[in-house]
Structures are given as structure tokens and as C-alpha cells.
Image (cartoon, rainbow, N blue to C red; front, side, top):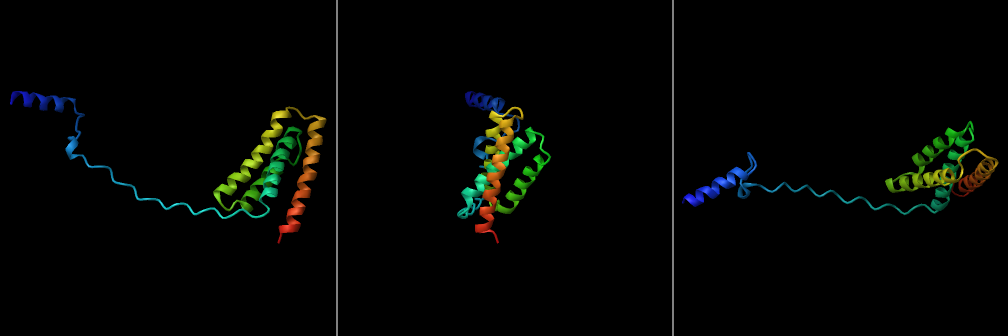
Length: 142
């Protein structure tokens, strides 16, 4: 009996203050299952061209800022408008944003100062972006 009392006393001393004995603890309430997210609709047929356009816009945002172009902020604003118009799902917004960032980073790795090469790349990208935007608008625009 004395031995049992000592064991019980030892358990009480080592147990956290105010903790319920293991037998009386109740398991945590199970969280209700969240509904599975709706599957993403298939991308439109012009998705590759749109992602390329977003990448070009990111490149232009970097290069025009680097070279002090007056319209440097315009490229960010245009990209925000593109995401607003075309980013119907979180995954789609992520793809568009990733493409923009990829274009921005690509030129930031190789162009540290505004040079003739930076300006030439900017001019070339602007022309390519314009052709791509016109083709998209002509084929899929409303």
C-alpha cells in the first residue's frame, strides 16, 4: 500500500500542474473536412502567347527602368491590368506573374547598366511585344 501511494505521489509530482490524467483527456475535436478546390479550367488556346507577352513586359519593365525610360512604370501597370483581365484562377495568376518575373530577372542578370545593348534589347522586345499583342487581339480579341 505504501508503495502504491509513493508511485501515485511520484506521478502527481511529475505531471504538469493542472494536467488531467491521461485516461481523462479528451481527443481534440476533428476539423471538418474542407471541400476540395474546384479543378482549374483548361487554359485558353492563346495561353503560350500570353505568357510570352507577360515575360516581355517584365523584361521591358526592367530595361526601361534601368535606362530611365519615362514609361518604365507603365509596364508594371500594364501587367497588373493583364493579370486582372486574364488571371481568373490563382494558378493562372501565378503563371502570368511568374512569366513577368522571369523576364525581369533574365535581363537583371546580364544588364547592370544602361548600355547600347540594353537599349537595343529594349527596342527589339517592344517591337516583339507589339507584334504579339496585335496578333492576339486580331485572332482572339472581341
